[in-house]
Image 1 (cartoon, rainbow, N blue to C red):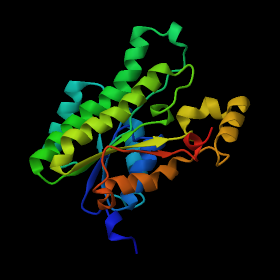
Image 2: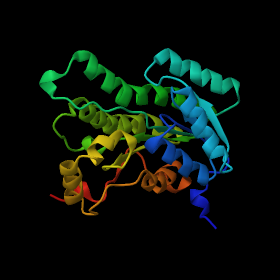
Image 3: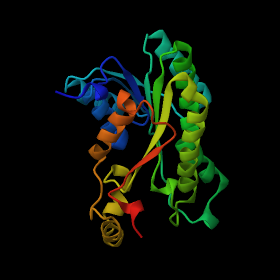
Length: 256
């Protein structure tokens, strides 16, 4: 029998960018812990397929297709959730993109797109979720998805690095303002994960060898290995944990 501190029954979790990859894996883990899930994405067909796959496993799943980078769309999506009687207790800000390019070759539009998708979206969605959590006076959980680049830089991913460094500090800012309302805001920093977004890196023998040599675990992480950390941060087990970023990286940041 699972420990009651980690039981998410009666809770509703919105996971952005959850039609595939890390977001889908986190959503499934929260569902397994008892949460009702709201999947988010902009590809309607993929979103429907993801929802059906979870429903087929016996989970309660809703969808909310909206662009997390669009202020008006985010506000409208939450108003629609309100009208459907769906109160988000747990928010996972997972949506993100990557762009590999040297700083000197970056355009302002490319920079802005990565920052808006990976950082501004967490502010927009987090703001709307927190407004409702505060009004309900029932607390809540906000989990932002950071990265190893919340701590360390690597060439060719400058806007991603800036965004994920921002996620670390945005998480702390959320904790500073929302902790008094019983809301815990924390972040997860995944290491190198074997996801669709990293396919090109996985298929690059030199980079694959570098990851395995640099990581004490000597392997890439699996998306499902974020599930336990997500459940912990979404549950009562972390009620006095706030403003932290937990790295799930096979030990990469711990060693030189």
